[in-house]
Length: 465
Image 1 (cartoon, rainbow, N blue to C red):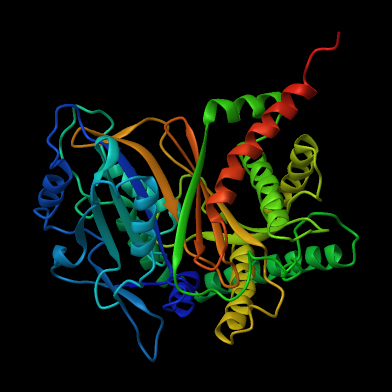
Image 2 (cartoon, rainbow, N blue to C red):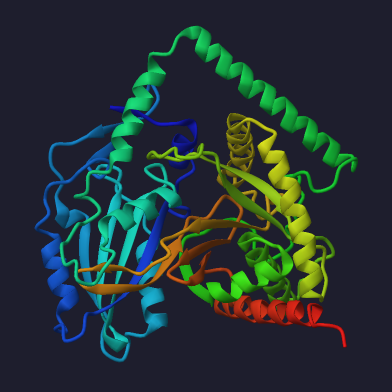
């Protein structure tokens, strides 16, 4: 029996039919050469034979009126309630039809009476492809953990034909997490009080930083919550119905910009998103006078620490003041992110986690009371970055060509963007409510903004004649 952290519990408290709290991933695979057209259907039938389900895929949530919720393992799992097959029709089997199908699968809440995960095999895609869509409740795992589990279940070569469904793999991290939780429960009262003291000290330091920022004695140490412009299509009351779009650029091109400008991948990616969002908002008749504010998850795990559940904080970051120069935008964002990194490194992780819960509760209360259309949002959108495998992975000889993360929507945000690097490509996954207009146009602008940044950097570094 495993207790949940406060952050994990918060995902259940915040969940509703309009705003489910699961995360997912879309894997697009190429059938092996000379394989049958029924490859995906055969794979689905093979998956159903792996009836031994390992933790945490055999756990259900148990709520109590007198104690914190807990995970409880069950004796058997009916795979027919968790593994599904879909066949796209010929002529309706392109990328947009796939995205529409996955958007529909991503909308419903997971049934809390069962383990909170699903795997969908989608056959019949054009050009000899099929897809796997996986969804799992955010209280069970964060994006980094899900990617690790997926990598554990796939092969590193096309010749490795052994099937290892992610629910059948014994994830050692889950066992270590159980031990850590048990150790935590046996800590002395003095140890608990010491932890509380460190948390309070960190919260005090973070509050002081926010106060200095609010009276303009510091700049970009951390952006204040609830000051983002709420008069944009990006924010408001989250409603049911989802749409999904993607963009991608070659990592070699990203690394070239990083090398020329001494920037990081985050700097470059956020510069592209900032430019794309400003262009998109201009199309929608919105002229922002202040920087776009994003909510940005930060990994609070110590180096080498692994485990189930969530160990993240979410802070607000101002991007660049409006500018038509992509190179200036890159410099502004780099300055902002470096200051934010310094702030995070100076504050205890528990304090960041507490700050995340406090701001999340305020935003969630506004959404539960139907006030998200009238109150300032925590930020304009949420952007996260998940590093993935550098080499191609395979399932029964089929190469996984693309992996797109599909996240959940935070309170007050109609758009969530996740970055994912895999096999030489940087993917941008955009999930939004149906109410957000022209999502595909925004995804196209991301790629165009990267090309503009690339040209701007090349022009700035041309040798003088």
